[in-house]
Image 1 (cartoon, rainbow, N blue to C red):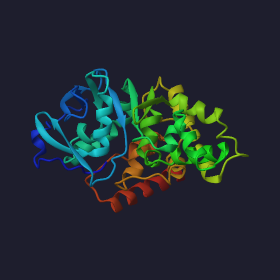
Image 2: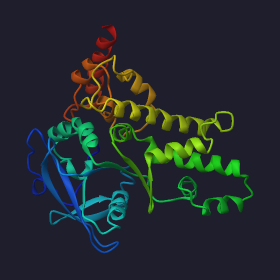
Image 3: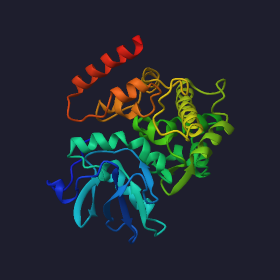
Image 4: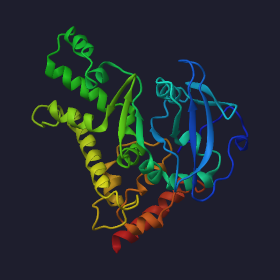
Length: 322
């Protein structure tokens, strides 16, 4: 979790301490298109929450910012998130959502560690996980079935097969797919919807489209595209495994129940990225099948990265030696 800077220096104006079983939800109030966004924060019980959606997104360029009104306070957020919030309001309905930037007090390390440890539960209890892939480009237009894509690449003299490879390579290598945090966010969502520009695609649709277009046919795609599609396949397998075990609480604690040990997950998602290095560990904790590691390591934003990694690897060695 990165330290985001609000347009105010005193976060106490926005945040009050949370009870142990509580979290915050953000209500986004509808307005005219492209007018300033107005939101309110409220504390809710995680045991019996209101219906809400959980947002999954990339932070975007730190130099590109926008402002919203949050509990009557002008608050700075990154432009990429502002564009997503605008898209969510296009139907004119009030939206109740959870998103890390605003629903966690980023200036309180204790709260941040506690709320990060609850992320799997927050995403699993959401009505849906809404993923923001940013605005359209030529590759995403193809993935979303827009005919203008083929017209674009046909004008460059590319064959349909070459255009397909370019399209899927571009779409599946977007910054969103490189985030470590999306592994947990997508895996625990009962429903996952992928927003790109003004279009929406269900996760199952993406999976089926990739397969039906022959993208997973290893004999006909480039190595780069094959690696990207394997990432989607691996994430879909993890997601299906968690959904199959949805009767148990998030955090798979039995080695018999799951092959997803922390060493396996770290190795599988080593190429993914986090703004804060320690999040590479924290983002995968809730997916760990080993009871020892999932309880021995807790999200802690008070210690230095080098200290955390040292503690983690000592505990990992102890786990391996069991």
